[in-house]
Length: 383
Ligand code: SF4
Ligand code: SF4
Image (cartoon, rainbow, N blue to C red; front, side, top):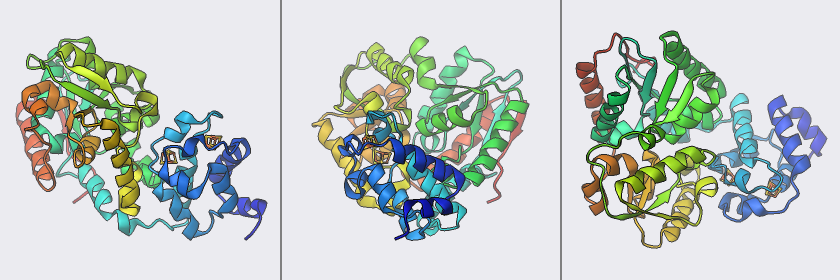
């Protein structure tokens, strides 16, 4: 095996800088391994850096087994973020055309459809400076809750616009940075050039992307808006729910507080998981790991299920809700807000594919018909 400095010469500058920073600071303490089966298998970040030559395509593949959940970064006493290392290695694989994208056909097709002329839609009323960006999964699995969420927000933001499009996070997380940059910049520039200044998100993944790449766009979750305003008339309940915080929002304490405030204002008893807020766990869907190492994805879900200890979960990510619900009864906050009785008694579930696609088409048509949009456009990818 070549020595470390020989290897470093073969890496791109971003990967070299990331390896330099993490390799020189990591103390091998092992704190990040405690709850991560991926790091338990491969070793601490320092050990991984020393052992593997990441110019070798075979070694690059291990980075696709990390969920990019950020838990390691939340617990590291040296304030390192090892997830950055694995994302940088994914990007390295793409630069050298070593990405194994046949395995990700399903998720990349999902992303592409999200931005297609068929599924996407921008409806911006006169004077619109704020849009609701519900993402792909919430409208597909819960079209009625999405519709009601918009209608409720519109009461306090009359010129609220709607954007159905994909934030392209799957490509971002698979290391397809050039593709992501191109797609996201096009959307962001379109919004900005049409007077949009604020984006309201319901999906944690979209939220994280807009926060990181929004370039001046103000970004808030719909839950923050709801928590400080009037709740929907239907939002009353008397059950008990344990909160699963989605990992993309682990650093967003204001969002976490808002969700708890909403549930308490509804009359619901909120209980906490062992891993919560900044130290929450991945549900198993993160980083598209399930396409590469499904057992690692299932392992995250199993840990969550054990922590639930028989309690029903509530979350504010449609992806988490779908994945966790296969093992532990899990409801989405949007359903709890608008259909509390059905959500709490377990008779309400998110739709599955292919119904999700039909739901999105019907919802798009509903918005086109009912929203007085001065500016409209349908998406960017031909399908
Ligand atoms: S980001 Fe998550 S899955 Fe990846 S190494 Fe860190 S804790 Fe493990
Ligand atoms: S917690 Fe931080 S210092 Fe400790 S092994 Fe992990 S990356 Fe290294």
